[in-house]
Image (cartoon, rainbow, N blue to C red; front, side, top):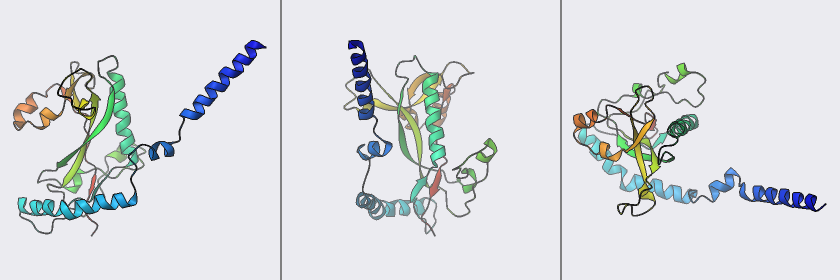
Length: 230
């Protein structure tokens, strides 16, 4: 009887812990600190459009000697594309299991701009419901939009640098965007995590490219950049 009571108490405790710790996705989102109100959303949009975007558009018109350029309003990424990218990064993490600092901790969202020859044709179709690999190669069905030098974003994974060093002033600084330096040609996603920013900041493109002959990019781009609706 005593053993039975202990067993019941054990199961009751485990059940209580499960119910206490399993918050719903909605609760997790609302308590994450990242949820913002409609008013905050409006403020962010207005601040960019009133104070930043006019200077971007003026610079864009000047660079290519054009008129009427309208800056990027938002970048569209399908849920499926985003989930595929996250699954890819989890597979990279699994492939490098056993390596120090192998865990992928986040995604860095970099600001960038396309080159002056960018066209709509080079951007994949908005694949919100991919059923085959063939569909991934379908042409973009958009026909309007000046992509030349257009502002965009690209994604890169981060890992946490664990060693003690004075250059890290806070926790954010420890999460480093990275690429992979591999040793085996047959597995280009297994190797050493290398800092991405020094390469991005290297103005000597040819030198930087030569230094990356045995390295793999984990970055993602070619999302649908949306100019204002006409």
